[in-house]
Image (cartoon, rainbow, N blue to C red; front, side):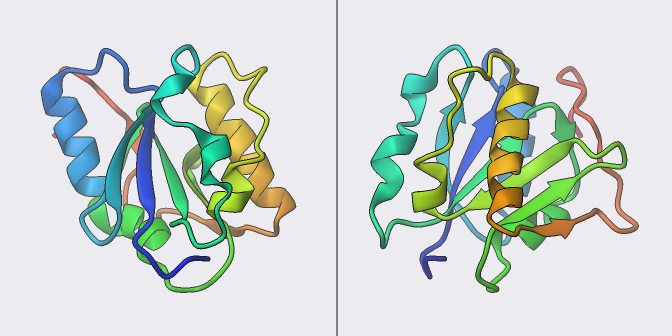
Length: 151
C-alpha cells in the first residue's frame, strides 16, 4: 500500500443533496484521505480506475453513499497504516467502505456493475481475493443514509 493519503471516492452519490454529500465526505476523510470525487455505475468517467495502475499511486477507498457511520469507523479504513486491502461491512455483510491499492483497483471489472451496491460488491470481492482485512463498526452504528436528514 502506498504511504500517501488514500484517494476517497463516493459510490452512488449522484443526486445526493449537498448536506448529505458534505456529511459523507467530512466523515470519510476526517482521519485520512483526500476526497477524489464520485464513482457512479452509469457515469464511470468520473473516476478512471485503469489510470490508477501506477505503482506509487495512492490507495483507493470507495465509500458507499447508501450507508452512514461515524468518522472513526471510516478512519479504520482510510487511516490504517497496515498494508493490504480492507473491507468494512455493515451487520448484513454489505460493503460500506473498501480499500484497495491503486494497482488492485485498476483491474477491477466493473462492466457488469450497474448499481452502486453492485460496484461496492465488485470492489469488495476484489479486496477479498487479495486477502482483505474484514472490518466491522464495533459498537458504532452503520445505518442506511437518509439523504433528507444525514446528520
